[in-house]
Length: 78
Image (cartoon, rainbow, N blue to C red; front, side):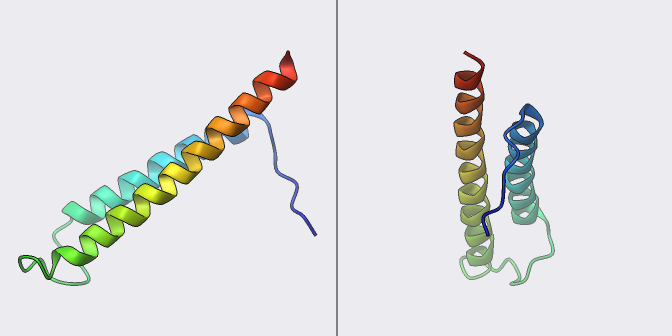
């Protein structure tokens, strides 16, 4: 069964905030002194880079969804 998505302005705002939260969480993890792999040059940076890439991609995806829904809302109003 397909899930019905809320196409309201509040949903668009929530997606934007969620994309910011994903990105901030990745940045905080990258600069946080406690990691899954200790920050030994090169080896310990691998997990930081992976987390940054994943959070960037997730936040970019949510941002694109937000842009699409915003355009659809504007088209429906016209």
